[in-house]
Image (cartoon, rainbow, N blue to C red; front, side):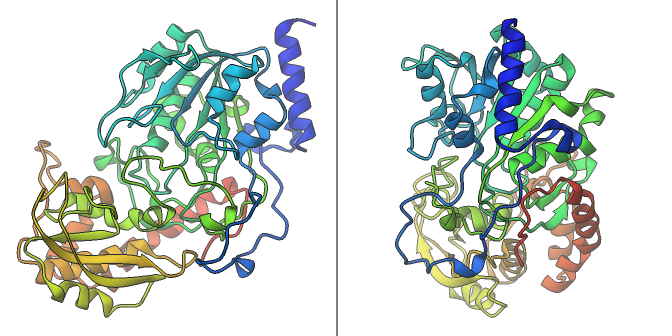
Length: 451
């Protein structure tokens, strides 16, 4: 048996041991069985003690438990960042390199870098990692053609993706994955996704991206809160959209997802028993991820979205705000959130060194958070009562408003400016969201979408 044949046999053996034979897998995606006994009803209180053993087993842990057999006989490159950890908190790249079981040729670092040393909009330069001796390539902002060049330079056959997502369309790691997938499809390479929980859960919410406003903070037509794991999203992108980029080729059977055990979309992240490793400097907790899918809209305004504080995206405010804003927002339905009048002084980003008045969102029920409706109410009331409220303009003359790129079109901004109600704004995206939910249905593998 040749080395390549041995590698293929090992991969088949690994997948067979997981009960994931290729014959049962639609569209080349390895889908796990629904987890047993995992419901939101047996979730402990938010102040309860942590479980000793993880309830959810990630794709990375399943791969490592089998000695990385699915990667045997392949020259491997990994797209990852500090979140690519195993349950014991060791990084999978360090474990792969030390094991001798993986021919690890390269790591491709996204925004913030492989080891996570860079701030928002920054990356780490290409370098050789002292711990592993592996070349770490700067892949932040890389498009498909750039990834093909990097794959060729590193001489990789199989690309592994493992990054903790935050569940929002404008969180750029999923678009790094998408461009890396397009490159693999164009160059005939295998692409393996190690699945992890979506901290926002399985419910899709919010407006769709439109073609006119596609950028790196929204590179394809998906809902703002997509409600999929990275494995489910990879299958959706390959099955529905990737051929628009490639002109025909898709990954098909060359896309493999190592699924989780024990995950359902109605679980809060705290119920997984997994450690939370910040996927980016301003995503320090799962609670921030829960509100980020909505409050990131405030990047598109003159108000601070809480960067430079200990509660980014949970605290929003400006020098021109006062108690009236928090009081107005608190008058709406709770959305699984509590609203508190708050004051803060950012240490970087907007309004550095200036006291900002505003509000802080507190997660009261992580399984019921509706960040999109909450953020809509914050915009509607902020536009009405915050004296220095303004829309942020960038250097793109054709699409000057940053919030349009975040929300996917001009509609949100125009409706807020016109004085539309929260109910009218959220109703405007309901038909397109329903169509998206139907489109994504064949790619969902875990069940348990939240209410």
